[in-house]
Length: 111
Length: 117
Image 1 (cartoon, one colour):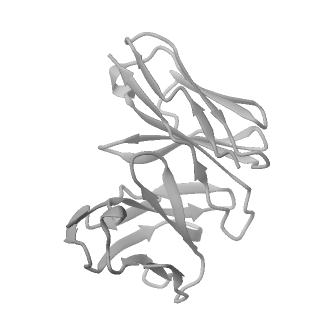
Image 2 (image 1 turned 180 degrees about the vertical axis):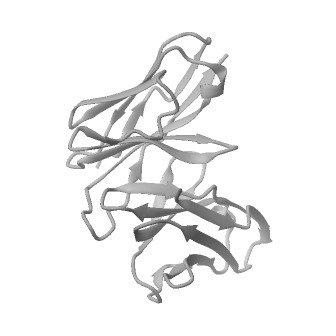
């Protein structure tokens, strides 16, 4: 059974801190890994990673994939209260478009 | 551009009743997914369609759940009869089929919050 595990489960930081969120996976027929941010409603897409060692960056957020060690990290620098959300990691497997999600990391950024 | 549209936004009903959730995917997307999200289990894939054809329904919890996609712009998820343990947020998502490389990002609707009393 495909498995995606995220850590920590929850995190509270002060505004301005840097955080690192972890995602490890055990799946068959890995294709790519995605990060989503979920606030009050729908998950919104952040990054899609298919190759090891290539950093994807968007503003203060960045992510990298290690296909040998089967994990990915999501970094957020200079956190802001608007970064408070649940961050979801998901893995595409197989030849179809099936995504397996982790249970998420709940990030709270305080003033 | 319109995103994925789900209705209703909220549904509260008594156990035993039939519940129908609706989804309109993004125009041009040919893959559609139904998920259920709870605090205990996170986001779980229930079923997905490719070009209106169900590909994998292994996530559908039991026979009380059924899903249809009669055309490229509409899908329904039906629960009959509903039970309190079905209470959750149900999301619909759509994407372009990505082929072998790894798929395309899925775009989610705002979800239907279902409460079965």
